[in-house]
Image (cartoon, rainbow, N blue to C red; front, side, top):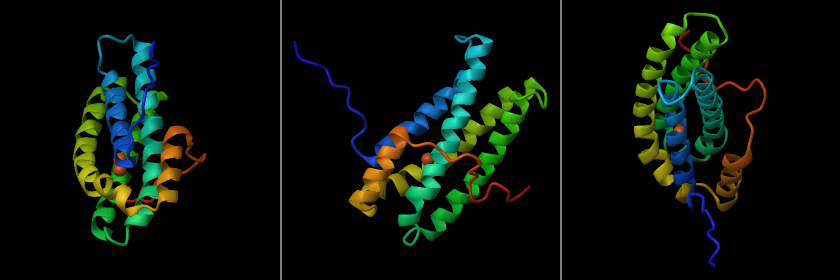
Amino acid sequence: MRKVVKMGPTTLGAALEREHHEIDEWIEGFDSDRLDDRERVESLRRAIGALRRHIYLEEEFLFPPMEADLAIPTMVMLREHGEIWRRLDAIEATLDGDGSEDSLTPACRELLVLLAAHNGKEEPIFYGAADATLSAAENAELKELIDSGRMPEGWVCRQAGVGC
Ligand SMILES: [Fe+2]
Ligand SMILES: [Fe+2]
């Protein structure tokens, strides 16, 4: 019998895009009537953790080699990361008991709208060119980090504090 080997995405762009979809699904899980209350909160917390780490990987490893050629788009991405990051802080504060749970469903929907706009630019502009722009070593390092990397404790995105 042939052994079925489950393959991951073959390109860096595809691996990052897959993270976008997973994160969206976990945020949507908070609104799902197929999950109980505990599972809904777990799904949202998983999304928050994955999204913060995703932003960390982009700002520390993906954008720097691409920034020289994509200065303006990078500025836009960083500004949007800051906005997303602050939304995550607010959602997390509510989950931790600081605020009304009623605000979470609209907050999640707004976050999904922000992400759709952000990802819709990031995927064609950055992910489409990532494999051609990053060196083989940078590409391999980032792929490995997507599989197993952790965001350092206390790391915040570059524009987390902007606009407060
Ligand atoms: Fe991003
Ligand atoms: Fe992204």
